[in-house]
Length: 480
Image (cartoon, rainbow, N blue to C red):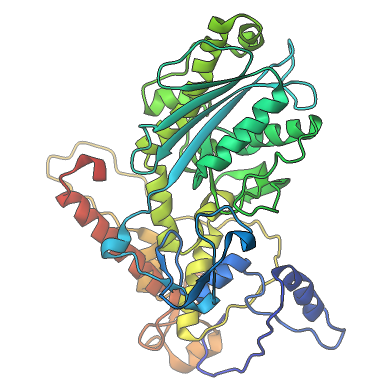
């Protein structure tokens, strides 16, 4: 914070575990009544800290050079990955996303949906209502709307469905165990569906607890790490305060279409039926939730109707992801902002800004302080809106508009944390080197020090212009 030309010596403390950092920070910041230490960059998530220190972006290609690693034998493996190896943390090379490294890796994307036998007049609960069907669709990331595998796990018999594998079971425990085995065999990179984070996955895990299936909640790529449910609260000015759930599924991206749509689109309704009609001009199968149990308790033909309904609900998220280019957009946003892809769904806007500031600060030898939260929710005054002079004009009227208004102002006036200064500096240097804002804040001009934020914004705007220019020359509609 604040413009300065002086150099300061800092003490860097390395800790053995990321979980120790909050306790150490609190201890230092409240050392005694006489001595309170200001900590710097002590609130950075461990994964992001490592990525910044090693120059890694999100969604990028990594390379491990020959003779820099050793492969683990099957006896020493602790994960479900195809290859497991030992490598020193600083031997991994992160490639810039240009040329051949601009391509997105071929990812396996699994979409699923569950159906439960609800009681009349009650919403299904895992302590009372069984899971009767699970539909699964598997696609590759470059052909999301064309599944390479489809299946339905169902209690009791079910008539065949063209293009889908039917797995029938007499016991719910066997159904859940077999679906988990299929999940681990597919080994997806991305898990998607509609409301899977707040309903489907938690329901399956909690239902397995009721049925005493202790080996069930293991969906990540680390053998000994069970998948647990944690309640979280997310708050931002853009979408307000929302209560949600969080699952740890190591090594896999959880991409809930409902969460992505709520974040990126303003719609009247967010039901899967309404969203599919809006973007795909398609709708779900005509099965009302009130007859699901009756269909299940019928014969194999009624269960087939329910299975087709469940299968369609697992296929539509893949088609939405393809149509709205969610995966491509989020990978590219991850690359631009330098954060992991899952941060884009689970965190707000500030982490994307912080990541870019930290990366640029590291290059410039600047350390970012940890500022206490003030709880101030005051709003800033927006731009002045002038009422038009209504009437008939016979002469042509020119209309002018700023390209990226607020970023342009920040760049033009060099507004940044690192250029903020005091009134005394303004009195000392004058208008030639310091800008005085209408709110009586002071920023040094670019001829004295170029701010971090203006440079970041210039790079983002330049990248945006390059992409727009490429879009004008692109002839393949699927690329746009």
